[in-house]
Length: 256
Image (cartoon, rainbow, N blue to C red; front, side):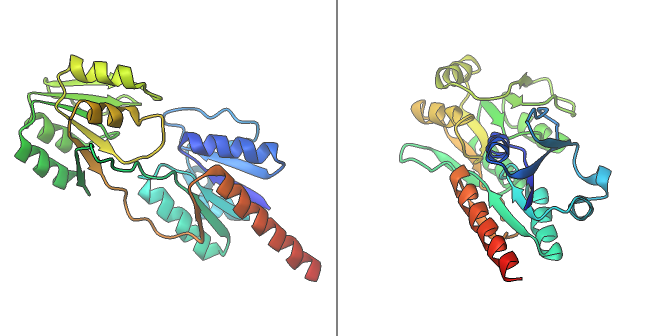
């Protein structure tokens, strides 16, 4: 069993470390845009184009199992993993953390895409928006900046677009604390937050802060992804699946 973990989240790093420490032959892949991964196992940084694509890398390195621990909104990569798994007839596990549940006091406006969000924001006429939905295009930031007096944009990496005069950019990487998020909201007089339903603890404080301060959240729904053979939403579930697959392989080899 030779495992390739395709990461992009803290879950991916933690899972890979645990697999390596348990004796699995594992390689970790990360785009390397936000952080450089420091792990005890082999690490690939910069994507698979350098190897001729994911399928070619899998073939050249005798990968037998794929684990998708990308960001839940990394639709292109997740779909590629599903396609390669099917084309090469190798097992794939998708490990995406659960979505944030909507609580009774949450004021969420759920949207599917940027055009839907822009229309909803325009209707509401907000004064100050807090955007925490990753990198955005020039057309998106221009549209939102024209609809509010001020936009606070927070990303993990520097933006590659021109920011209108009423947009303030803040570089920050979670985890974020509830008190700090409330302070930020009050400092910039935020009256709405734009977010993706990424799940997990590191960035949940903004959702709690919005709930406590009765501020609406424009929440992007997760995209629909091509299916994989196996899915789980926690580290133990991945271990259980891999142990079952390994056991089945051993039995098959014994029969042969």
